[in-house]
Amino acid sequence: SFTQMHASKFKASAQLIPIKGLIIDFSADRDYMENQMENFTVTDQTYIPRNSNIYGNFGSSTLLLRTTFAKTNGAQSTVFENFRNYRLAIAQRLVSNSVFESLPLDEEGFPQGFGKNQQEVLLFSFLAAYRGESPTQINLNPIQSVPLPNWNLKFTGLTALKSVSKIFSRLSLNHGYRASYTLTNFQSNFEYKADEPNAIDKLGNIIPVRLYSNINLVEQFNPLLRLDMEMNNSIKLLAEIRKERAISLSLDNNLLTESTGDEYVAGLGYRVKDVRFRTTIGGRKVTLKGDLNIRADLSYRDNITVLRNLE
Image (cartoon, rainbow, N blue to C red; front, top):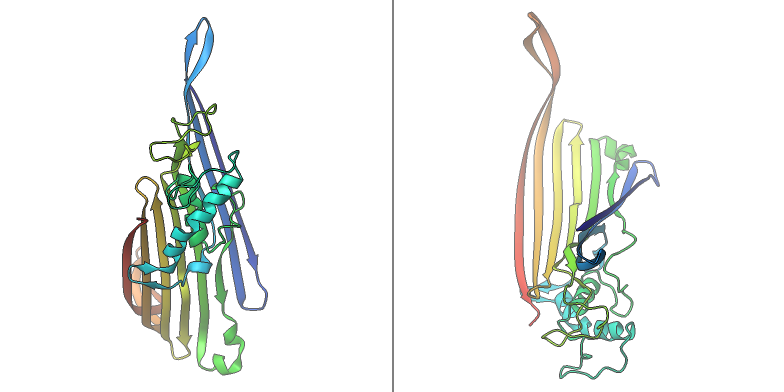
C-alpha cells in the first residue's frame, strides 16, 4: 500500500488605523488537508494499482453578509427558496462546462444527468444562495483558492471630545465579524470510472469524481455591537448585541439544518478606588492597595433551529 499526505495552511492578518482611536484588525485563513491511499497487487513483478482513494477536509474564511439579515418567517426563508430556484441555472452551467452537449431534459426541465438533486447542482446552488452570489457568476470550484477577510473593529476616539470626557473616563465601541466555509470528509467516488465519464447512477445523475458529505457555513457577529463605558464617578455600563448562524447541508439526505442565535447583554458595575488590605508575604505583614471592581451582567439569548428538506 502507498499513502501520501498533503496539508497546507494559510493565515494572514493586518491592522489598519485610519483615524486616531479607530483600530481595525483584518484576518484571513485557509486550511486544506488531503490524504491519498492506494493499494497494489503484484503480478509478474508488476505493481497494479487497486482502490485508489483520496480523502480530506477544507476550510476557509468567507463572507455571508449579503444574506445575514435576509427575510425569514418561521419555516419560510427567501434564501432557502433561492437555493431551490438556483438549481436549474447551476445545472445548465455545469452542462456547458462539461464535455456533454444538447442533453435531453427530464420531466422537470433539468438536463439528464444533472438533475435537481445531483451533488454538484446542490453544492453550488447552496453556496450561491447563502453567500448571496449570482448562480450565473459563482465559481464552479468548491475548493476556494483565496480566503475572504474577516475583521474586528474598536473605536475609542469619542473620549477625545471635551463634552464626552467630562462624563466618561472610558468609552469604547466594538464590532467583530467572523465567517467560515468548510467541506468535511470529502473522498474519492469508487463508482466513478475515468473511461466512462458519462456513466449515471441509479437516480439518473452523472457520477461525480468526488463525494462531499457535508457543507457548512458559520457566521458570527461577536459582537454585532458592544458599548463599554465607565463614567468619571466610577460607574460602569455595558450594552452588547451578539448574532450568529450556522447552516449545514447534508448531501447524504439533502437535509439542511439552519441554526440562528441572538444574544443581548446588559451590564452594570462600579469601581472602588484605592482599597487597602493587609496580608502576609514571606512572614512579613504588608499593606496592599488596589481597585476593587464589582460587576454584574445579565444576558438574554434566543436560539432557533430549523430543519429544511428540499422536497
